[in-house]
Image (cartoon, rainbow, N blue to C red; front, side, top):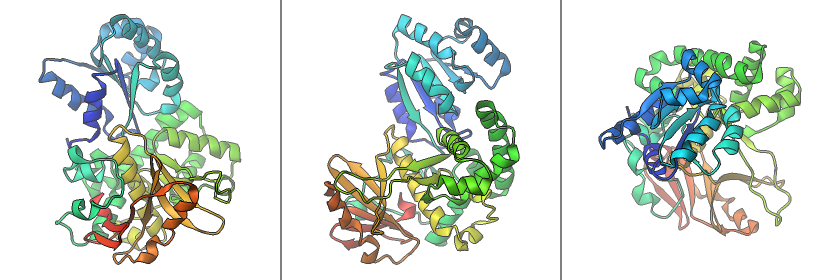
Length: 413
């Protein structure tokens, strides 16, 4: 197993909270992560039980007799896929309040939609919440333990490094984009890609979407998934999606909510203040695994994706997802926004820290110029301080574009 950045947060929060919950899409390594953390604890004499509610007999007991379930699998314990028995959360609260010990229950869930109401009602103040996505670049390249939340700064030119084993930055980036970030797929390699994603989509629709939304028209929902993937990196347009799929806006909104709470998509909100009321208010839509997006939009290989119509949008999607991972996998919220106004001034990404906004542009070029960061000064109209900026692109080595902007390789994230 590759080291995961989130491991340190799990172990730290487990000394503070009686319950830890790790949420994220299926197959991103949630249970594997917690088992690795349990092995670390085992070296210090702590033996932790494990049970998954994918097991129907365990699920039946958890649903119908939660107290007996917790007797059969006593704390400390890992309970996998707890969304199948949300009533178990009330029984966990009773045990937590009785024993008042940190690290009693480690939970995983693939559906925040089914979980968060129960968590807020039963475990408020008792649970540490963490989000896990697929493998980050830092994790794939052995930098999991030194990965920090991404913030542009003047030291980037000193800290940024790109892997040496590559034929070109362009080829390496699109190979990773096309394959995606699921741990199992990265273990098996490109030859298993189509089989993996075909099975993943079928399992996701049949086990999660149908279970929660009672969606019966699988063909229409599959077309919806492909349409969302084709719109990655674009402004969200509910009416356009509804028209393309042949359903109403309410249905599209409901289905998007499920994709978001499943961890499959991310809606990047615009940054605006009362100082400027001419900004675009619609969120931008990003598919959080680019390999799944490329599969859904039928790109047969990395070369065709690199040369195709989705090339720029999928690169932006991949960079945004990597930056999101740098925060979530460190147990932090991602303070990310974008900016666009009616005068067509646009900044791909804004990272907020205190009274400062750090601007980021994402470009499909190996020869960035100052023109790429020409819109950064618009931040000064938002009532915030302009921080150091970054142009993330296909350059091989960091390059100072100005005293306040650095161009860095996408592979150095």
